[in-house]
Figure 1 (cartoon, rainbow, N blue to C red):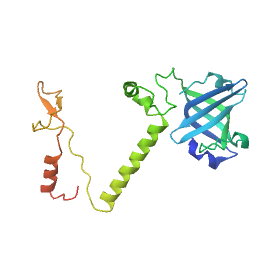
Figure 2: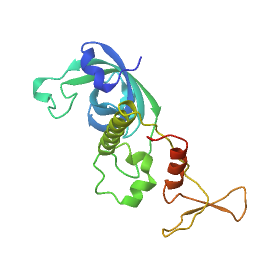
Figure 3: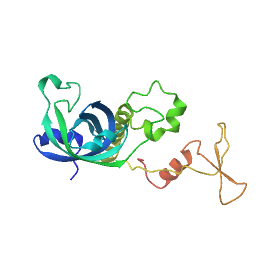
Length: 207
């Protein structure tokens, strides 16, 4: 059964199974060190010579491994890391998916990378820690708003249509061509006003 990296502190002295991406790699001759990353964090993994496949590991490889959770020596503790007191002594390694050289790096904040490149490789860009934290913060904010409005104040959440008939007003229309009706277009709503009026007439006062 897979264990999340954030949970390894509860498994000291036990053999566990981890899955994730190779975030960093350091080859020290007979020993290979990697930082393994999953959605919950990072941990250092040590490969002894009895796991020869570790020599083939590269950044962003997807791997599954089993290993023993051990406390790191005091002089090797990374105090700035949540799992800095622990490391995994790998017993087995399974490379689930190799990766070619990354077109953009994912181990930095990404500020130094051209925005167009980040958007082109958005699936890689979203792997970086800064964006993962941003998505987590956004999720907490939306949950707070929903808890306040829906659970505590009896609002109803309604998703109004994203496409509608074009109703030219003062603002610019953004047209979307119809696949079925040649020469016809939908438009992105300039405002949800019409749908709000429908909801009010229907009796949904709080939405």
